[in-house]
Image (cartoon, rainbow, N blue to C red; front, top):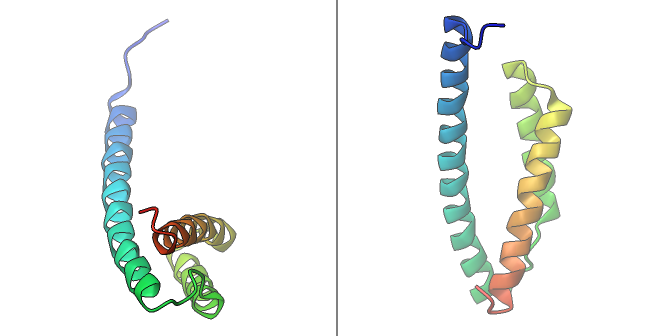
Length: 98
């Protein structure tokens, strides 16, 4: 059995690795912004969660996913995971833990 990876497979894997790196960097930038939002909310004694905004964001992301040919259900699950983490950070900021 050959252990050599076909050229096309290696190329595709390299593209996936680059995309994964870009996703990590984009998420890091997003969390830098949401940390600032958390600070502002804490300073103004605003709640960590904003259900109306979250609902708008979910609808917006589902539409973007649909346009891009990505499963909107998957996109919503992904955004829900991120939102839950952001709310957790905002609660920690408000409690003086971050």
